[in-house]
Amino acid sequence: MNENNIMRRPHIVKCVVSIGVGEGGERLQRAKKVLEMLTGQIPVETISKTTNADLGIRKGQTIGCKLTLRKKKAYDFIKRAFWVRQNTIWGDSFDKYGNLSFGITDHTDFEGLSYDPKIGIFGMDIAIELSRKGERIKNRKLKQKKLPSHHKLTHEEGKEFIAKAFSVEVIE
Image 1 (cartoon, rainbow, N blue to C red):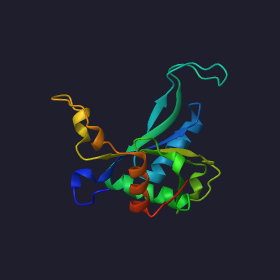
Image 2 (cartoon, helix red, strand yellow):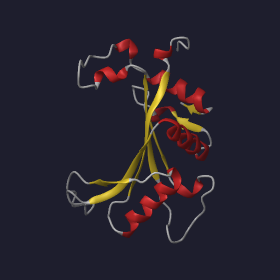
Image 3 (cartoon, rainbow, N blue to C red):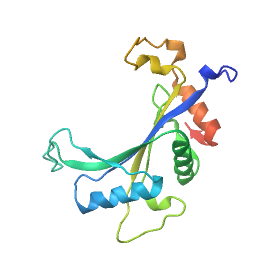
């Protein structure tokens, strides 16, 4: 990784935290409260795109909640999430573009939170998108361009960035 060129340095674009409940109502409200306590932001509800009779889910039914963190809030939350995972992550958690996804089974493992019988225990999924500066050219509306392959982040570069930025051990 070339540290001198700021256009080649990876950075975190966003961090998406989601809790899938599978139903609406009281349980969903408690999951939203957990996300709000952890991040300080108000989550949005996720809606089912398809019907699954085996799971008892209809199309258009509310099944969970999520929120997106960016910039400093994302870095702070990711640091706390890695602390819960004892600063280790599996190498298989990275995709071919260096993005990262992992789960946390118990929200009470976060520092400062304790078990509340009124809320219960919720697990969550965390997805982190990494990129380099200048990748906006592939998504912008005007003068959209194709991103050169040498500017795309790779699997190895993503692992190296996360290991260095958050003092995390990547287990192969």
